[in-house]
Length: 336
View 1 (cartoon, one colour):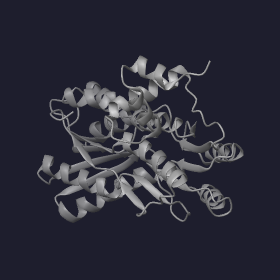
View 2: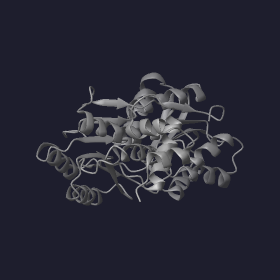
View 3: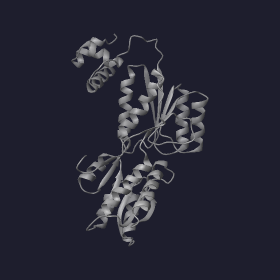
View 4: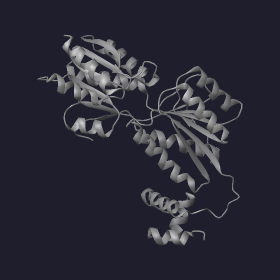
């Protein structure tokens, strides 16, 4: 027997009119109440009466699914997915485990075979990906939005994410404050092929050279997003007599920081700046193991990528700008 809006209202403890507004996204309603109603409707298996309405499909492709920085991005995607169910929009997520163009090409092709109407993607910056995205946007007329990572030379309509070059400059300013503009700074990235990491590093180095001539970049090394490798880089640099004053980590593998400091038994650790608000980084801030953290609003990235596409499909509302930058949030132990 079909679930009715009255049954949902009874379960939620609200009026049937409130349920109707939540399910159809009209009228003023508390967002938390609306989300609870949508969750209850999904749990009860509610199906809108008008079954003849065409069901739209939004494909979503992510990277590095097992890394903790993805938790907030996935939370935003899931929130959008819940909201869109009652509007006859299905969100199909393909989680990439790595930064690999072949893996991503397979995910794109699979979603296209599932007749998606729009695509949100964290693209690998590769010519094959660029060609495929241009094909589906130009030939198949599928609107494409990139989020978290971007790729130039495509017909994508919008990028949702942080201005990573500016965030690197922000990190340089913070490091300059910590060190009083002097000392040697070790920069650790994940993969040199990562556009995000490269932009952060480029912004950092550019600002150090411009504003802090008394500071020196001791080196830029790749840890391949691996904590053990990051630990080795720090230990070798510190024991090698490089007199490291500060460390910037723009990638994953950050738990290697603490492991390195524990092994070195330093009287005073270098100043540390990292990226992304994760369970580990929150605890590290609280424990004074890092000084500043730059957060990129992962929830907003995942949520907006999907909801902007839904507005394109449902309301014919195309983005007015090419970039929707998220805030560069500076976190310390005092504001987490």
